[in-house]
Image 1 (tube, one colour):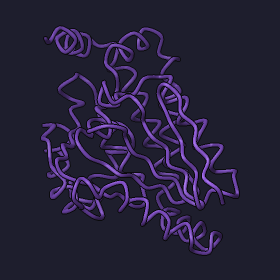
Image 2: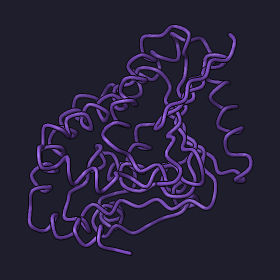
Image 3: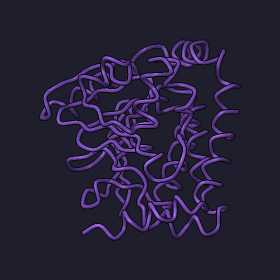
Length: 255
C-alpha cells in the first residue's frame, strides 16, 4: 500500500504497509497532552480499529521526548468542569481495549500518562536517555491508566509503591527490567527499529494476531475496565482537593 501522511498542529499520522504511525506533535512542550490531543488520539485510534488496511499502530513523540504527561495549565483549567476530563477516560479505555497490536517508540521524558499508557502497549522500543516517572501523589492525585492494577501485577506491591507513590524516576534499563520495555536501542535507531518491529507484526496473519491478543488480555479485561473507572473517579475527586490545587499552583509558578 502507498504511504499516506497527515499533519496537524498537535498530531500527525503516517500510514504505510499496514502500520499507522501516530505521532504526538508538540515537541516544544515535550508533547505534553492537551484535551484536544486526547480527542485526536481517540478519533485516530477508533478509526484505525475499524480500518482493514491498518494492522498495527505505533505511538511516538516528535522531538526529544515521548510525552511529559498532561499539560498542567490545560488540565487545571479543564478540572474546573470535571465533565471536560471524560475524553481522557475514553482514551484510556480506547488503548486498554484496542483490538490490534499497539506499540510505542519512547525516549526522553515519559511522565505520568506518558508512562502509564505504555502498560497497554503490546511492544515498546526505547532509547536512552529515557526518564519515566509517575508523580501523581506529588501533585495531590492518585495513579491512573490502570497502573494501580497492572504495575503491582508486574513488579509486586512494594516496587510499585516506589514508582506510583514515591514517584521515583527510572530509565530505559529499569523499564526493560520491569517488563515495560521490550527492546532498548541507540537513539538514532529508535524510529527505524520500532517501525521494523511494527512492520513484522503487521505482516503476520491479521485475524490470528487479533485473536491471540484477545486471549492474552481476556482474563483481566473486565477487571481492568473496572479499575480504570474507579481510578478516574478518585482522580477527579482529587483534582478538586486543596492538596492538588496547591501542587498545581506551585508547579505553574516554577520559573
